[in-house]
Length: 312
Image 1 (cartoon, one colour):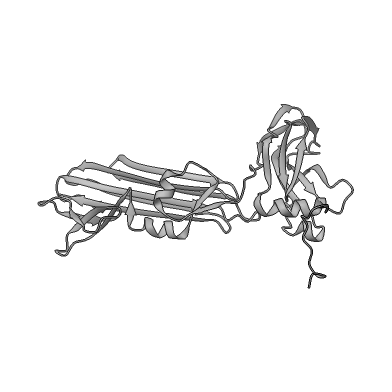
Image 2 (cartoon, one colour):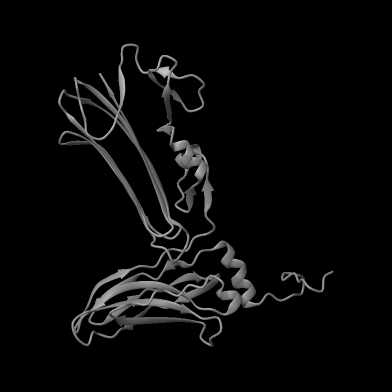
């Protein structure tokens, strides 16, 4: 039965503009491909460089031009410049701006190509006074292809591409695998370590005495601390969510910071991973401070893990 289904790409057939957008929308996120940098020349002007972008699978070209926006009638108001895509309109893609006390949220209907709904992308924000524009900030994100999920630590450590994310299985590995080493208790109850893939744990040292410590630990005798800090974060991919995701951590010995890590991302599909380790001498009476913080707005997520040992 072929009367109720049609293949769009056939010899001699025609692929419509809507079909073309739907095809590319599956594999490309919305955003800027090249150029389109935003600057503030002065007065009430916002300059946009020439460039290219993708909005719901449709390729657009931006001309180099200057946009003149309204000043505030009194005091200060907020403003934004944005792209407005309406498949049902004669001018399907337009550049709009508004200056108001409360900016409207970008309308982003993911099914716009199917039902002629609106999709908008913010390009920049600013504050308008009666005589000038302040705090002009470029906010557009760069278009990317489909995000590839990395589900093991070897792939994450070898990765140099920002358009990839850590999967759930990789996060699971990070719980017990830090800096290429795995840790556990030996049969005698003492902690040991092994390289990734090895079968047996190795004692740290025959006469070493390791203690897993937490924040606020006071060193009883001169010795060492060995610390590992791990962070992972990812944007949700939902354009309605807050894109900002961050995680950080540090280890202090009394007043001295001996280990620190911090990463963040402000992108719908952005990701980050990080692992740091340290081994430093400590003195009797030193206070060990261990701090891990994370922020994940909307549907984003961030993961932190700290493992710190004291060794006499």
